[in-house]
Image (cartoon, rainbow, N blue to C red; front, side, top):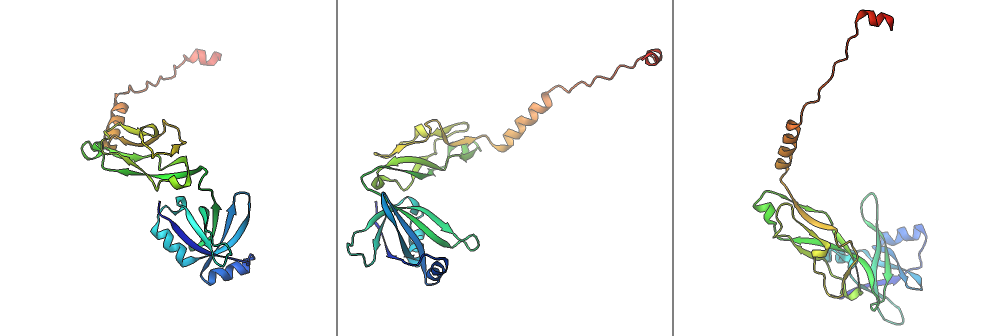
Length: 223
């Protein structure tokens, strides 16, 4: 796995006005949460972090080594992004939560699923590919986290599906999803589905509406 290094600085500004001032100066306020350690408020260069986001599309599942500027012991902290907060108006990043992790302890993460190839059922039979499960939860060492899980769908025909149990995962990566869960499937063409539905409708016998029996005049009077 490629090593990602990001320099951060400790920050003393914790109030709203101070945080607003940080953003205006080109920083993103952040905090590092440690396992059994006191959390550490830091600030991150907005420009550098945006470059990482553009370079690594799955940055949330990648280990980021944070180097704290001016720290006496220049030892980087291995972290995963816990949460990225965005401004609801302009969509800009307003805050980042980092989780400091141990490289020797397994963790649970969600990994995106990507498909490879075009199914036979799509290009030859006119079906459509249904991508049902877009990510899978796995447990592994931080150094074994895969960037994504690739699923070859080229041999799928109409009515066929790929389940979690059909996928080969990298060594050291344990999947936590239901083995029977469907990841992708190929469904029948939409026109064919409509044709079947219409055929079922036309073959059904029409409902017989029974007319109300009219009573003789004398019986009506007696009532």
